[in-house]
Image 1 (cartoon, rainbow, N blue to C red):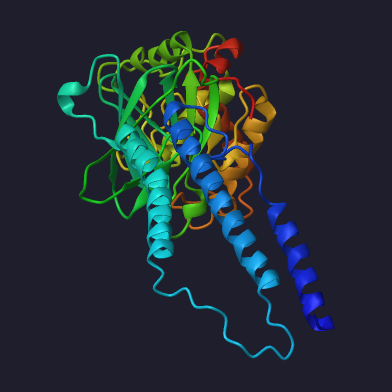
Image 2: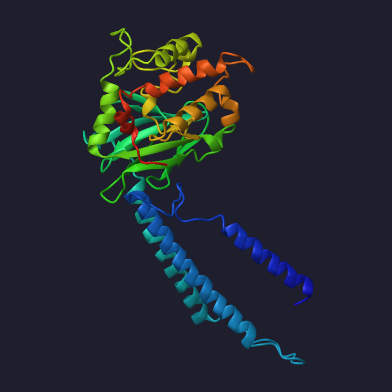
Length: 382
Ligand code: CUA
C-alpha cells in the first residue's frame, strides 16, 4: 500500500474511535438501557438483528477474503477460471440461505410490531389505565388527565405498574413523543388523533425518565424536552391530591397555597404574578385563569425541571431552584433560544432582581406547604 493510503487509513481509524467515544450505553436518554416492557422488546429485537447481521458480515468477509487469497491470479497465468454462472444447485442454495436469513429477521420483527404497536380501542380501556391527552406545542408539552381533572405541563407523573394510554395531538406542527427508556416513539400530527401506550412493571425503577421531541419542529426543537416521573401508588395519589384538593377559580377567593407560615415575599410575588401579566398566559388552578395554549403552572413548586426540561429544578436544592428560575425569568431567550416566553424586565430595570425573586418565591411555593412536601414532586435526584 502506498504511504498516503496508510496515512488515510490510520487517520480514519483514529477519527472513528474518537467519534465512537461519544457513544454510551447508559446515558439518560439511551434506548440501549430499556426499563419497561415495550422498549425491552424493541431492544431484544435490535440485539437479535445485530447478532444476525454480524454473523452474515463475518461469513461473507471470510469467504470473500479467503477467495481473494486462494484464487489470486498467478503471475503470467492468463487462463480464465472456471465459471459458476448457471450452476443451479449453487444458485438455489444461495436463494434458500437468503430466504432463511430474511425469515429470521421478519418473523421476530413483525411479532414485536404486533405486540407493541396496536391501538387500544375505547371499549378496552379500563378504570385501571392512566389516560392522558398530550398536546404538542412549539416548544413544550401539555399533559391533561381527563379522568382526574389535572392539567400540567412538561412533567408526566404515572403510577408504576399501570398501563398509560396517551392521546396525541399537535396544536401547530409535527412533534414526536419519545421516552427512550419507557416507551416507543410516535408523532403528534395536526388534525390527526394518534395514540401511544406503554406499561411499566415491577422491574421499572421509580424515578425520573427523560423524554425529547423526536421530530424536527423548528426553533427550539432540541429544547422541547419533558420528564416522566414513575411514582409508587402512594406518591402518585399524593401528587393527584395536590391538584384535586385545590378549589376551582370561581368557587373560592382563598389563595391557592396554604403556607404554614405566611411569607411576605411569596405574597408580593403572588400579586406581581398578575401585575406583570404572567396570569394572562399561565393558568394556576384556584388563582389565575391563564390561556389554555400556554403552560399551566398549577403546583409548579413540585416540578423537577423548567422550560420544558431545559433547566434542572432539583427537589433537594432550593438554591438551584431559585437561581434557575431567576435566570429563566431574567432572559428566557438566553436559556432557550426562539421560545415564546417574553422578557418582562427591560435591561437595567432596578426593580428586576427584587421582583423576580418575589415571583420565583411564589411559584416555588405552589403545591408546597412545608419543606418535607417539596418531595411529593419526586425527590429522585437528577
Ligand atoms: Cu417538537 Cu421537535
